[in-house]
Image (cartoon, rainbow over all chains, first blue to last red; front, side, top):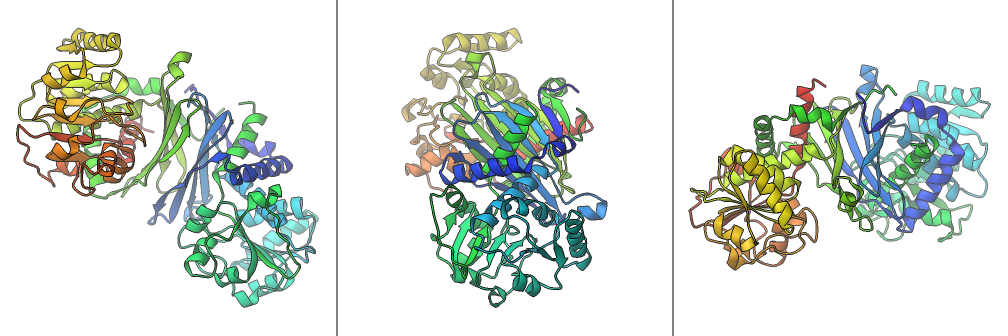
Amino acid sequence: MRSSIEVIDAAALHPLLDRRAVLEVVRAALIAHARGQVQSPLPGQLLFPQAHGDCHIKFCAATGAARFIVKVATGFYENPRRGLPVNNGLVAIFDAATGAPSVIFAEEGWLTAWRTAAATALAAQALAPPAISAIGLIGTGLQASLATEWLPETLGAHELIVHGRNPDKAEQLAARVRSRGGQARRARDVAEVLAAANVVVTATCSERPLFSVQQVSRGTHLVALGADGPGKQELPHGLFAQASVVATDDHEQCLRFGELGTAVREGAYPEDRAVLLGHLLSGEVRVGRGDQDITIADLTGIAAEDLAIAELFARRLQC
Amino acid sequence: MRSSIEVIDAAALHPLLDRRAVLEVVRAALIAHARGQVQSPLPGQLLFPQAHGDCHIKFCAATGAARFIVKVATGFYENPRRGLPVNNGLVAIFDAATGAPSVIFAEEGWLTAWRTAAATALAAQALAPPAISAIGLIGTGLQASLATEWLPETLGAHELIVHGRNPDKAEQLAARVRSRGGQARRARDVAEVLAAANVVVTATCSERPLFSVQQVSRGTHLVALGADGPGKQELPHGLFAQASVVATDDHEQCLRFGELGTAVREGAYPEDRAVLLGHLLSGEVRVGRGDQDITIADLTGIAAEDLAIAELFARRLQC
């Protein structure tokens, strides 16, 4: 049926992916968000406990932008048993002068995955120690897999050390990196990752800490992606008391849905001490990061990133 | 471009409109919402003060339902100068077992308008005085126009008395009712409406009371649709102190966005005394409504209604 709304499928987006361009617009979005130039109220959420699924609704308008977006991202964790991917969703783009919907990106979660990968790479870079020994990855899902491609964009080439609950998946991910010419190996356990790497990305759906405070070496920068709702946790909350810098993509979201919230509720970190990743990226906030400092970036994903990547693809598609 | 998501335009929805069926599903939705069988967190909102526009995002899942929805409704009040309607929007339908989007209703605000008209007709009936003298309408926009078609479905045929800021529009609306065989006339002012009618629907975008407490006759039932955000107000807050029953479609929404919130903030009404329209419709709450009682229904529009009407049209379209 002919429609006034154009639907762009994920298959049309993949050939247009340009990591440098995405990093640029996500960086600008994090900075604009930190400066308060973006209208992005707290996201909505629907939960489907019986289906083991959840749905996050984010919406965003930016000062002076010609378009605004509403994004729906779903994660249904039994889907693989049906031969379906866990993640799905869409981004609806609207004209900010008339309110008319113009384009639906039936992106199946890919725009969300790419902007998250970009934010991960930017957060890893923003607080990386002066000398990177190796990059650790805990988790073997889509975000961990994307991290192996996106982290080198900001950090340069380093050995990747991968751990996951499923050793086969971890080995497969390391093998994929090696097949692209990178250096990668599977770690037997989390301790091995933390002993070898001083930049560590956690990208799991864990509901309890993946390691203890004592296992984290001085000088490590942790980027936590997994917690995006109440009950999820990857980092031991006590680690916040050891951290010289904690950055978030959005304080309020991270207090509600992220690692920061757990740490604050447990009394391990004051509510008002974290810095915004956008302020680090713009240089408006500068932190002296010594090579013995433990630092944390807590990312819950912000709507400004969704708007930025949707705008980028809409421009490329001239829609 | 072929897509996994089907887009259904508003033009395909109009021929399928069946007011009796919509009334039935909206009634069931109000009851289910009142019973807590519906997951509908507080809606999201984006504001576009420069364009004089706003965007409301509602999302809803119901226990046991096969689908869930995310609805975006926009109102951009300068659109008529461009030859465009004020309202637009879309409803996205998702599979509640997998999270996959399946259908977009590019409904241009019509599903919202129809479910609001149905809720208005149900709210008018739920607390109507024993003998209806006439039905008053304040406002001449889309919702007032729809009310002239939907109110007779629940209240039966009565004279309609219409007032709007623009006398020509009020006359046109009354003439349209007469051309359909109904009885209708334009009122010179609000006082004339309130003197003649004892069921009065307010459907304006007013930011101040449309009349004073003293102008409201004993025995009047008021249904207020207009207020759907901070700053909007149609009823004098003092009227709540006179009302024997106040019903809302959702207490929390009406406290935040509706007339009830203004009345409570002004100290004219206790926060916890209102009843739910759904409980009145199911008979779970019964109120003795005398012919001298003033009653109020405050409607802000709930996501359960959006889910219900979207499901109805999806079933009719077998999508």
